[in-house]
Image 1 (cartoon, rainbow over the protein chains, first blue to last red):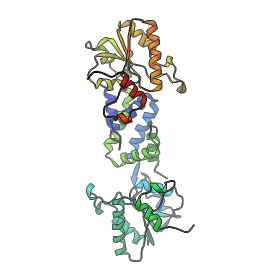
Image 2 (tube, rainbow over the protein chains, first blue to last red):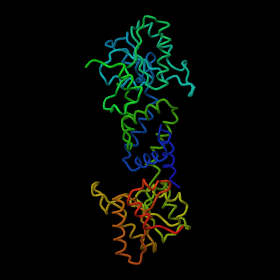
Image 3 (cartoon, rainbow over the protein chains, first blue to last red):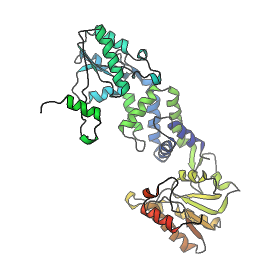
Amino acid sequence: MLPKALEDAIEALGRLPGVGPRTAERYAYYLFRSDKKISENIATAISDLHDKIKSCPVTFALIDKDEEVSPLYSNPSRDKSIILVVEEPLDIYAIEQTHSYKGTYHVLGGVVSPIDGITPDDLHIKELSDRVEKDDAKEVIIATNPSIEGEGTALLIDRILHEKYPELKITRLARGLPLGVDLSYADQITLQAALDNRTNI
Amino acid sequence: MLPKALEDAIEALGRLPGVGPRTAERYAYYLFRSDKKISENIATAISDLHDKIKSCPVTFALIDKDEEVSPLYSNPSRDKSIILVVEEPLDIYAIEQTHSYKGTYHVLGGVVSPIDGITPDDLHIKELSDRVEKDDAKEVIIATNPSIEGEGTALLIDRILHEKYPELKITRLARGLPLGVDLSYADQITLQAALDNRTNI
């Protein structure tokens, strides 16, 4: 009943994460009504994603196809003795935006999640351990997400690294109240952490 | 800091309606991680939108480029003496899914909205009026959205058509309680309409 091309676009856009048929319809119809240039830009940009981006072989950050390793690693101003460990490549850019971290990064590529069939071997933990030795790291900051899987993965990495490098300092991001969240809306665990880790004014 | 191709994709996807930088990031990263085929499908489907779809010159529904007029108009089983008027092409498919309407459609292409600079002349009202005469229509069902602009546009069309065709029956979709909505959550105007238009059980 719908024109075939519109149906195809709705189906294709419906493959994006969290996009249902209604939203896909809205996207497709919007693109149809808008200037052709917008559709062309999106089509080109999406095609380029696979052709022009690769994973850094050292840190597993995303880099341009013609780069050897991530500039956040190769740059001599970055302190290689500190490694901040994140779940996904985009987490790096969240940290970078604070402009206050000068160490290097290591992307795990996910978290241990038995339900999704992701075991420790699927993550770049071995490579992290090797880097600690190779770069003579003094500190590993574990910055996994504050989820059950994230916490579990953090504890696992802590155990593995501590066993192999008893001298290594292993830290994680502080838990506490985020900016702008009312005390009465904070969950119990966050509030407990905020209380335990209270600081002098 | 991000690879250029990823930044481009995030910017391009951020042009979709209601998509902010965070969501665009999620889409782009998802596409990068998924099979290349998914990205290719979306890219092709989006490009085809402009090349393979056009507006029906009679009803302004969306049709395949190689069709003359909408099959919902040309099909002899559709009753041309009833015209159902909608704001946007996709509204047609919502009505069609009820499988209970056998008349034809007419797409306005929007609603009168002074704030957005959309005047009656920007809509296909003149073409609707011409169709009433040409198809010897007996009834026009105005199915604009139950918004302020939709109501205003409905009243305007009613006035224009009534003046020109005093015999024409002009109706609109019933107001009442939608399925599954608790009485206590219904707004006052809807409840008033549901009461005024109450039916025998």
